[in-house]
Amino acid sequence: MTTGTTLTPPGAPAPPPGPPSAARPETGRPRRARRRGRWVPYAYVAPFFVLFAAFGLVPLLYTGWASLHRVELTAPADMEWVGLRNYSRLLADPFFWNALRNTAVIGVLSTVPQLLTALAIAHLLHHRLRGSTFFRVVALTPYATSVAAATLVFALLFGRDHGFVNWALGLAGAGPVDWQNGSWASRIAVSAIVVWRWTGYNALIYLAALQAVPGELYESAALDGASRWRQFVHVTVPALRPTILFTCVVSAIGATQLFGEPLLFNGSAGATGGSEHQFQTLGLYLYEQGWVNLHLGRASAIAWAMFLLLLLLGALVALADTHRGRARRRRAR
View (tube, rainbow, N blue to C red):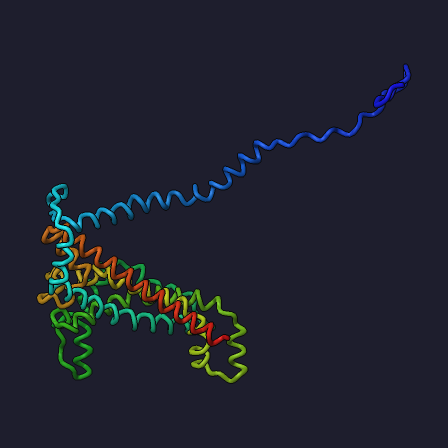
């Protein structure tokens, strides 16, 4: 007796082949592919981190190390350890506090009108307006203009003897203003340059955020009898709160690093920011210490002081946002 096999009689056709046996899956190649797939995202972002480490992190750490030494720009390899002396000298330096005060004043004078005007422009462009594409391009034109060209033009506009602004003030019955040597006048003039350059840029950011707001909110408000102003206050502004917070932080960072506008506004003053340092910002003060007085260690300390101020500002904004979120959740309960 034969079991497990089937005998074929002589001369009979061979039976058809059975179904092919299931091949053993190749586990090696899929595993290797999965391992490669896990590393692909890191390979895509690796160039950014390499460039950031080379041109961002390493200079930042070197600046922090140089701030603890007495080092001159003419001999950057000769370092003398002084610890925190550069920082203690900053705290006792009246020019540092003057530059910090000027930076804060110019930052407020430029940021508040800039963001308010940008919000109004974005609200107008968001509604159906003839030639809206043209106006969007026009709004972005000042941002594309070089800071040197814009500052030189504004220096002519704010000229004391033949400037257009003083000419317009004369028509209104006011006397001429010395925009480059006056304390508040020079700060207002520098702030006007910043407002002109960055208002359109922020307006387009607000416009992009407005286009993501559901139109049903405006329709519901209109059905409830809300006017355009009430729609702006109760619909537009709450919907743009995260974007407004972002632009406030970015504008504060830009104001802290303000350099080109005050440097070129009064070319004869150079890095001093006027004859009495009346519009010298932290950026100008850093440049004066490092590249005019050649004190690289002091300039590094100023740079780290600016960095710490920005970290403090970011922490305050984060705490305020967290507190507002908790209050909102409590009201929702």
